[in-house]
Image (cartoon, rainbow, N blue to C red):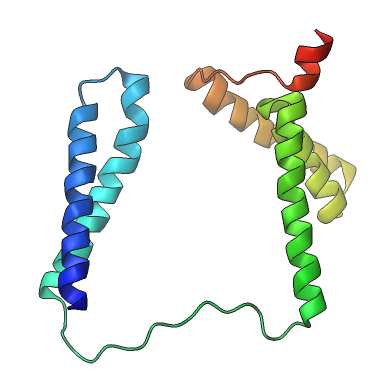
Amino acid sequence: MHSRASLALAIAIMLLAGWGTISALDWPWKAKLFPLVIGIPLFCLAAAEALWSAFGARGERQAAADFQLSTDQPREVIIRRTALAVTWIIGFFVLIMLVGFPLAVAILVFAYLKVQGKEGWLFSAVFTAVVWGCFYGLFDMLLHLPFPPGWLFTWFA
């Protein structure tokens, strides 16, 4: 039963990915880039899953392993680390809303390297500049994606 359900799901994903890829071929270059980059690998992976489900070994199946958090750390440490990660994510979201996405990327990378990574000033500044340059080069200069200004620039402009 599991094999038939997996095969049916893989075929359905192949059909959707193939349909999305073929329909995107007639679009302008910038519009079809994302569907092609996602659709082609998705189709290939679904095809591999379909072949594996159809012709794979029918031997004895192992039980699925459940997701487990670290068991070698105290619960307080796990909760503190999780809260810290959530705080960074929420801070990034607030920063995006206040100053806009391109500037928020640079601020977050620099702040994370200095505060969380405890890196030096030179490394943090150079790494931030490289990351922001790659981000700006890809999304602004190459893809010409418009990012709305942050609330601070809207309020005080």
